[in-house]
Image (cartoon, rainbow, N blue to C red):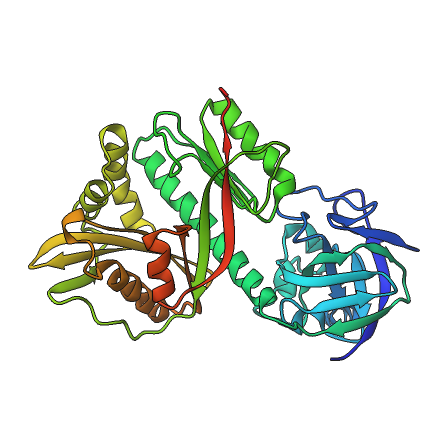
Length: 414
C-alpha cells in the first residue's frame, strides 16, 4: 500500500484549533498534552488519536473554506494517502516507535463549523465525501512522533480488525436500542432514570430489578468513563450492571457474560416450522406482543406492567419493528428488531414454554434477518448469554461471535 509522512502533530487544551507542536508522546489514551472538552464523544482507547490527510484539507480549502491543519481537531496531519479510504484495521507505523490502527470514522460536529465559510461542517462527512473524513485510531505501540516521520501503511492482516469493526457498529446499535426501550418505558410511566451522554448510556430503576432497566452500555469502548455509570447507580440507589471488555475498575466483580454475534443479512428466510406464521405487527396493533414476552419470561407485578405500558411507545418508535409468531392464529412467540445506521439489532425474542424445542426461535431470527435486508441493513447482530441456547441459535443461524462482554455489578448498598 502507499506510504507517506507525518506533516503536523497538533494538540490543544480542549476544543479547536489544535496547535502544532514539534513532538509529542502517543499513549494508549491519546496524545500527551491534548485534551477534549466533550469526553463522551471524543477520546478513549478506541478514539485515542484523530487523523486527517493534507490532501483532504487542500481539497476543502480549494472550495473557499478557511480550513487548515489542526482547525478541525485532528491530532496528526498526514501526507501521501487518503486516510479515510483505508479499511478499518489498517495500521500506520509512524517513525521508529508508534503503531496506530484505524478504528472508526470521526464524525464531524458543530465544534468545527468555523473551518467552513457556510458553517456546514458536514463537508467532512464520510458518506458524502468518503476521501475527506477524519479517522480515529487505536494505539498499538506507544512512543514519540515528530513532523517529518515516515509512515508505513500496513493492510489488515487477519479478520480481527473486521470483528472489531462489526462489534463497534453493533455496540452503537445496542445503545440506540436500549435508549428506545428505556424511553418507551419512562413514557409509559415506569420510574426509569436514563443517562444519555455521547456514546455511553445507562438506565437505573430500583423498583424494576434486573438488568433490562439497570444496565450501562458503551463502556466497552470508553472504560475511562465508567465513573459516569457508577455515579448514576449511586445517585439513584439502584444495583446496576456495566458492560465492558475487561475489569473497568479495581476490584470490579463480573456478574454475567454475553457474546456479541454479527452476520450479513439475506432476504431469503429459512423455512419456518410447519404451521408457524411470522408477521410484523402494525404500529397500531398493541397487546399480544407484550403478553407473549411477559408469559415467556415469567414476568410479574410491576415488571409485567411496565412491558404492557411501554409497548405502545415501542410500536410508534420509527426504528423498532415487532414480530409475532402464531400457530393457528394463536400467538406463541414474539421478537423485535431495532435498526441503526445500517445495522439490524435482533432483540427481545421469546417463545412460550409449551412451544419450545421446535425451531421457532431460529425461525424468528431468520425472519428478522430477512427483514433487515429488506430495510437496507448491511449488518445484523444480536447478543446472548454465553453458552446459552440463544447463543447456539445465533451460531446455527450463521452469525459469528465478534466480541465477548462481561457485566460488572455496581451495588451502591454493598
